[in-house]
Image 1 (spheres, rainbow, N blue to C red):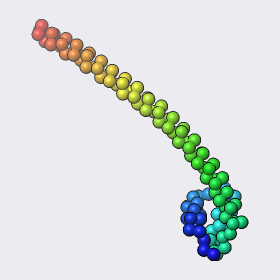
Image 2 (image 1 turned 90 degrees about the horizontal axis):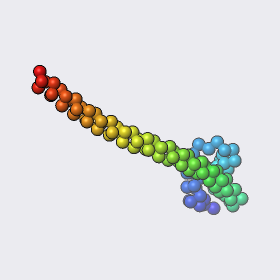
Image 3 (image 1 turned 45 degrees about the vertical axis):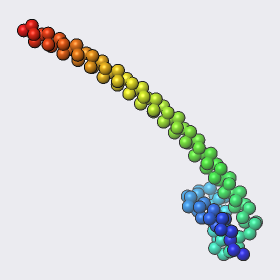
Image 4 (image 1 turned 120 degrees about the vertical axis):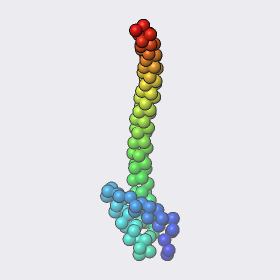
Length: 113
């Protein structure tokens, strides 16, 4: 009996990951062997799919938590960047204003000499 192409594709995609979880590694190896020998049956297919679901749901939750953390950190960085840009603008305006006073003072001193 030929192997379901969708199952074979799933097995291939899972095989790309470096999996250290013993249960999934065992299920993956068994499924790879069954596909190679053409002996995939429901008693192997069902537990494999459950093992993949369990592993990847956990993996997905972890990745989403990491993404939320990175997004929060980026928001803080962006707020700091915004605040520093505003603070820089204030400093530039102060320099321009004080330089104008100093230039006027220098002109007065040069005219008085």
